[in-house]
Length: 117
Image (cartoon, rainbow, N blue to C red; front, side):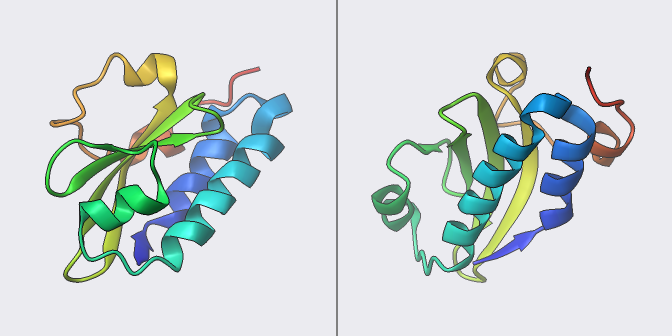
């Protein structure tokens, strides 16, 4: 699988994660990325075998739990072309306020927000 865009993960940690938690969150996202990058999923059933806690929202939209479910990552997956598009990432509390089916990538969310203290 190829992820678009890994930079979103870096910007999320840098700009939206409390400084004291950045190393832990980065480590968890790096681990997720490494597992996803080597996965040859052909469908959501194969994805669920590897990531049992992932929630399949639709034929191409999936929610991954990150860092013990403290964070959620919403991705669109094209199994045919082996592409994972990172749509949204945030805390579990923020996740509860979005519509997973309708949320769209918003670059400003990751580049325009100051880092919480």
